[in-house]
Image (cartoon, rainbow, N blue to C red; front, side, top):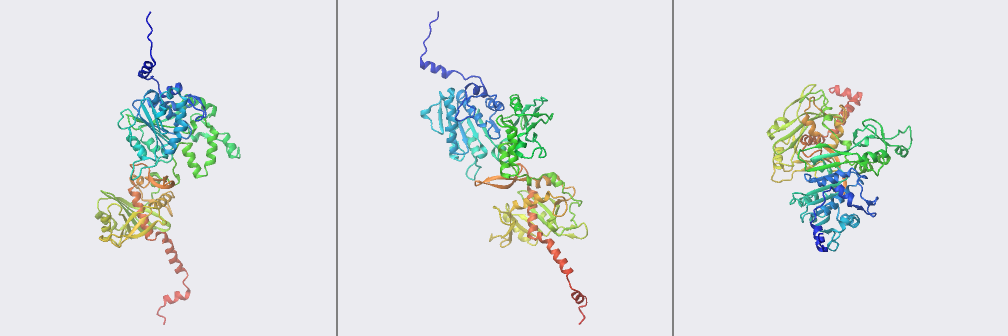
Length: 602
């Protein structure tokens, strides 16, 4: 009979230390080891994957060796932070390495450490035995073979020191943007993972704007996945969408609250009703499907869901919140972000290329419409070319683009602007005023405008919002040929508002139109921007931004300059001048008329 070998505590600890980690996923580890503390969870006790089954694949993506970055675009309160903590617990237990968690502020980082992370450690035996309490601080937690730093995104110096393998970014849309002195917090934090070939980055947030961190990450991800569930009636896989939540009409039930209580989900495939009870069951059989793939070799994966998938929120609650929010822009903003997990944007001033093509008139390119009283032009200056546009103006800001194009020298601009443009009725017209962008090649444009001062003025977009649409300033470069010449400062945002509003009017008086067979490139460029809400100095501001970073907006800028040129010439008062002329003619007395026709009566 073999003799039993006595193992000392030291040897036992050494063997325990050398034991390889279990071959399990994050979701399996969580269900086996994670215990939710009553102070930090509404459902204390052992973690159960069946409660929020949509989190399983998100957590397990952490174990996919091919994936470097996991992005979770979510509404509020669906478990995004809990999933992050499960990944962190798995790393501590199974694959320790330096980790960094970034929260929006330092204060929140301390708060989360005390109220979320430390309770998780203390309530989970597998983690507490690896925790070195005596060496730890609130924002620096020490474990066997690893540490966890917690920092706020508002402290750039904390984001640029130690190398880390695991990076967790929570509620990134609340992070500040880049400044002239520092890159944005996410970029600074990423730099710290460069030395690890097996790095993992987890980013989650409720979206705010299309220009926010999380939505940019979503658009740039290699793979985008949405959660599909089987309809309990037809069995077809469907994605839960807010448009499919139905409730009784006003004729059936008068009050909004009562109507919301009868809200239900209507399957988009078979039209049958899906109840809250059905939702709990079908969530368990849901699957993440790829809806967009940008590359064959994927390093980043984005997961997106809305509140309809939450097992804690009934369909009637969603309907009630929408009814309460729909007539208040601020509340609708919150509903769009926090419930639908979609970015907020001002759709009132949204335009597209198709809108431009609907504004075509019967007049060909270069032909001036019969109602025209002014011709103005705008030139947007680029490094290697100039984009120009010429617009006809009539009463009540009625306008039409009669020509546009690209020139490769200022001498070409001279030829274009001095052509005679034929009217559709009779005669011809010259361009009355051209505004040329002087923001880039300032000295050259100043000299050019000085030499062509009869019909050209330099212009520049104002750095700040102005009370008026434009303001006449003066060129103050003493050595410039244009010294003392008028410089037109333009509030480009105000003119873009005007253009967007008028291009949506049907063709006719007051509309913003284009010539027949207008090209698609022009149509795309003049609708390349949309107006969204951005955060600036702690407040929300409306701002025109490019719809995507690669779009060209040169013709839009040129049209802004052409409209400003029309304003300089008093386009808004054209109809008054005509009225005054008619009025004087109408009210001449009989005696005045006789004297005028018989001026030799004396």
